[in-house]
Each structure stands twice: as structure tokens, then as C-alpha cells.
Length: 258
Image (cartoon, rainbow, N blue to C red):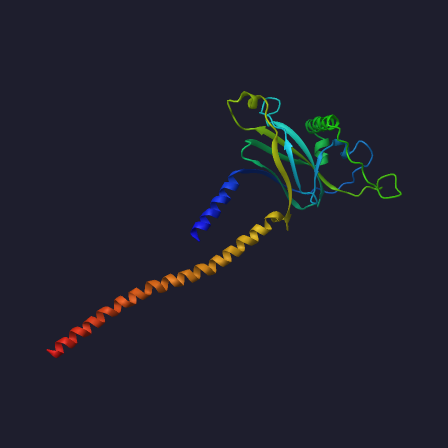
């Protein structure tokens, strides 16, 4: 049993050591009506993450920090379908074999469009995404509207939306000059995790239940083991205390016979 426990602990430690996580916690903003006319959010060509599709596996471009970009390469994502006032956690997970530093910054639409540096960064990233899609000839899927309607729903239903800015900075040194000049993209998983009752990440609830069950079982098992050890210690002591009395009686009987 002890060997199995040590093996499981070692596997968990190795698995944990091969992965890194960076996260940010925020509250869902108030819902707003997004206009359907162009230009709109669809024209930004951003990858979308929502509670329905809460995980995105992708590659993020990275670079070494420099004067113009002290946090490395920037990427933008769209978080949609949020619940206003609800606590969320967004995690970026990547392999430890790709040493990288990440910064995750959520912004409301108002914050982005009222800050020149943010709107400029978003526009540059959007243009690079659009040129990349055009180069690979990957047309964007057309928006599906209800039958008999040539336009989208009017008014547009409100939606709680955030823009996610992610910085990726290479964090390694090697004698390989190619890797120092050309940083490879980083394989990442971006996960949107809502909180249960705004207290605990929903994805960790099964783990919490599992740990609770183990703790309860451990309490009862430890009580049984303690009682067994206590009885095992008491038996030899009882035998030792009985032996002097028997010897004393034997000596007294021997004296009487004499």
C-alpha cells in the first residue's frame, strides 16, 4: 500500500512539473447590445471563448522582451456569453518544455476603445490575423440567420463581453542561435472557468469532493489503526505485569513446603 501511494505521488509530481499555469480572476461585466452593422466584433477575427466553448487549444507567437515591447508578443481574444457579476477565472496552460512568461489582462470594450494604446494594439493584432487568414485562404463562416430573414435579429440581444490581452515573452537562453533569433510559437490551452457561487472554480469541484472523501475515509481508517496499535502494545504489558505475580506465588509455595 505504501509503495502504491509513493508511486501515485511521484506520477502526480512529474505530471505537475511538466505543466505551467498563469491565470487571472475577474467578474463578468454588464451586458451591452452589440451592433450588427459593419464594422463589428466579427471583423476583428479574434478567437472566441465562452462558457459553452470554454477551452481553446492554440499556438501563441512569442518573442524576447525588448524596448518597444517589454512583455513580449501580444495576442487578443474575445470572451463572450459571460454572466454579469459572476466570478470567472481564465487560465493559460503550457508545457514546461517551452519556457515562457505570460501576462493576462482582461478589458471591457469601453476600456479598450477609450485607451489609444489598447485600441492600437488590438487593431495591429486584428490586421495580422486577417492577413494570415487571407494568406491561407480560410474564409470565415457566414452568420446563420433564421429562415425568412435577410438581416440579423433587431434589436441585438445584450451580451456580456470582455477582451482578453495576452502577452507572451520567451524566457530561456540557449547556444542555439536559431532559437535565440526565431522564437517558436508556444502551444497553449486557454480555459474559461466559472466559479460556483462565486467561491470556487467549477472545474475543481470534483477534485474537492474527491479530497473530502479521502479525508473522511482517512479519519475512520486512522482511528481503526490507532486502536489496533494500542491493543497490540497493551497485550505485552499485561503479560509482563502478570509474570512477577506468578513468580512470587511460586516462591511462597516453595517456602511453605520446606
